[in-house]
Image (cartoon, rainbow, N blue to C red; front, side, top):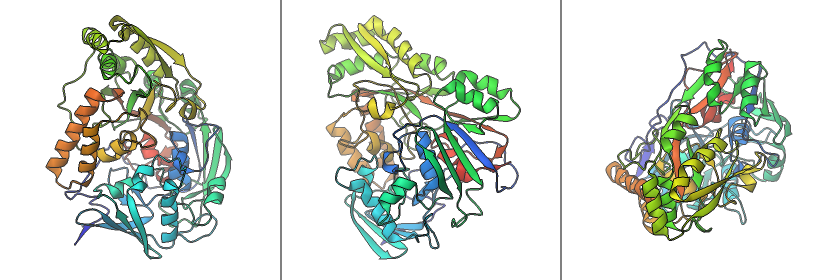
Length: 515
């Protein structure tokens, strides 16, 4: 028995993960080809490469799966799961065997034809010995990969996964040419609508239209895309106001009102699952003490952060990563609010006395991270928690601070499904578990939810998991942050803006065009 799933229904069966809500601007004129699209983005590093396994921030995600490479599937601007290099997929009744039909007539930028061998080789990259990939947990669940034909591949999973077609849209799982992977990583060789012209890591990237792309008429409209790293939030705003760039990400929120006064600039404000966090490495004292972690949670004034850091462009969160665009968000959980008396109670219960802890912050983590740290410092003091703010360099933040320093600022764009988010950052032993936190009950529910096809039971499972995170977890999640970007009216889109990541799911280069 097989479970047939069309691209448009996007798992709207019992295995459904749910379509995302969308927001956007009024529909505009038909797409035009040509012109240069210039972006000023944060999130770049001098250590950046074309190896999608290492991509962790907007700059290379946009250049990777958003320009030069492609995945098997993608989440559209409308929130539907659709095929990219796959044209269709079907699953066995237990969601353990997935068969993907692959697109024909696809070429890599070096002329190599795309097929099943490339998919298998690209998936295997993530489970190579010593491979560093955030997608390793996804691929590690694959027990066997079978080439059924040149354009059909089958994945046999160790454990059933109702969300598997969503998971292979992960921006880490880009498709590389089999037998030429080292060359492709060195030079940026993919199947995407743009090919690499120049690449200066953490500084500038230039790509041009790949005329032999399989869908050159309907995606990748620009003749060229130039992307510049602009780490400073004020400098990004200035760049778009002075027409040096056509789009920027992570708009400095205090500048939104100013930008709205420019008739040639559109502010894009989209509610999604993005959340700002303060992860604690539980292998380091005092973060190994659950009562101390609870004290930190009650010492955080979330509403103040939403008001002052997000300028109201977001909502209070509750120490779990499941956002308002997820199907099973547990919005009925009791809200942890600022309560210095309760924080002091848990400090006393922890047996630690007064403590001083370092909090590493940088604008690379999220815009306003330093100010958020200062607010936290002020509200934690009355509970006997002394927070020392450590201002870290933006360059190298994700390689030198995150996952290394005991407590730091971080941001997550969220994921389309609950299992995807939990499996990426909360499952025991995964590369991006940025706290090292483990909870036996949580891990048991994670495995159960992954294979559960009944919607009501999945809702119960994910509700319980969010409750465990909120109470026992080692990640403080004070706020959901809207995606706030800006674009010039020199570029246009179809009126829909994806809410999975910044700038139309970081696919604006493929989806937008010269106005």
